[in-house]
Image (cartoon, rainbow, N blue to C red; front, side, top):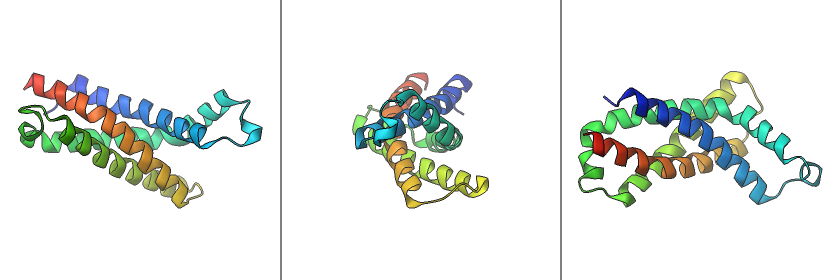
Length: 142
């Protein structure tokens, strides 16, 4: 079992990081002219739209980590950053895409492939950032 503090850290980190990455991608791609002077409003909007799927994704990521705990040695003995990074990127992309798809279906928000693509990208980056740090921490606890 993964300790409670680490479980909470996984969920909250993904919930905070994924919307920030989404905001960064939107800003990097270029905001429409009417939004350029309102970055804080755009950030609030991004959090309003993405925080629930990001929270669900963090919970799913925690469950995935709990499921791979028996094979943790494969990633951390010795610590292999590349495998941890890849696991995080793939897992983060999948859980964020599934959570976004599910949430948009349940909440009956307009649905498009744009949302899934953005969720996949932000989940991939968030997972790739979080997974090596989390697995490193778990390896020290084992």
